[in-house]
Image (cartoon, rainbow, N blue to C red; front, side, top):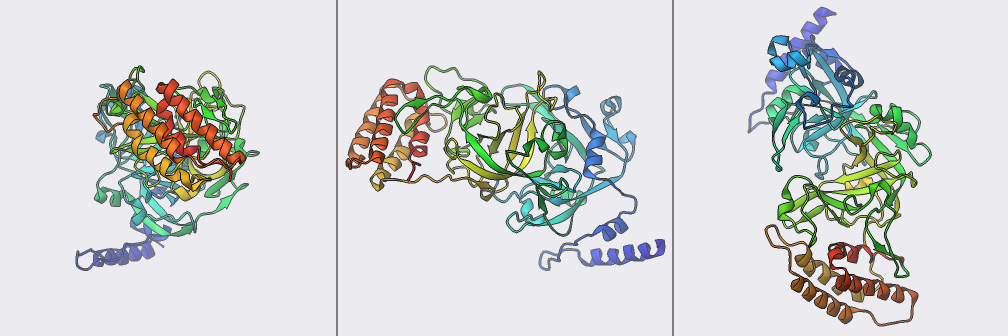
Length: 500
């Protein structure tokens, strides 16, 4: 057997030498299977992703970025002599020579997944922090469920923890953020393609499996009756996995919105819903708020949250992530409650401008299941400040009705005018001063005139009455509560999605 492996290694050496890429004569990439990979790497030991995570140990209390001692990582080295004195003192290293393998469960083509490759092996899932354009070398077609295996050499990498999500990446980093706060990060992206190729190796094609009962399936399915399977004490083993959520409901919080009868409803402050914590919204947390408008009279905060009826913010060359609340548990009061999930979407994604579904809309989501917290008990209680997050690979995996429908074509000019012109008074370009009260009043007059000019003729239908009351409410808000006017450009569009 040993002689056979030596012959196989020699043959592979010839193949790999022959496959040296010339620019004019590119050669196909070597595709590995277990036998060839182990033959070329006889000193490596295969361990499961679950066993790799176990090397890190407890994740709770190590999700902070403000304390070096709590920004734990495990450095994989050949010898302890490679470690820094701090790593030796903390015992944050491992001399095992391991490899893991898993099926690719992510796709970064639409930009919501960025510089990350997520893999799953039946025991657990983990993020590989790499570079961009990964869908070209490590494809995963979630429509056909065609994927591939990848092999990862762990030695030389860092197993890090960010807000209780583990990942494999490059050297830890630290530095001052936009607020002047010093931050620590337990690992970083491998930006060099050459280094990526030294650690991540393409394997054979694979098909993603899906099941609501088999917890080792590549895609696990839950609904309103079974979501408890992925939470509580079960949470850690499902984090980072592809989960198909069936029948989730969109929940708005902290945002007043009109009903069909013209009354204005402010939702109960579930999930801490308020004007500081609102859904749907965009959130700026990196100091960029100085380039964004603020509601007059409202102090600038480090974290700026504004209502936003698109999946993410992308305007005036500013891109910010969006937040939308989805839930099974309608009696929930906090984001940490089981059955409550935040859909996080990037302002750089191709679908950033898509409309958020209306409040109460029900749909399905296929997403990577994550957590965002410094610590948690997973079971609730005083230490449970976590938020459970969903990251979609593609807009096609977010199966909700999102496109507005115009009941009256005559409104189209009015809607377009409002979107094209009103934001300049509410969301000025970076560096533009927030408009004065006089400018806002002029905008109200212009908006009202445009409304009167484009209002469809009264046909005595209930739908006309509903639309007229809605528009009258918008004018009332503009004239009487200008501090809430930042809500309107999005609600103008969101509320035309009326019942046909």
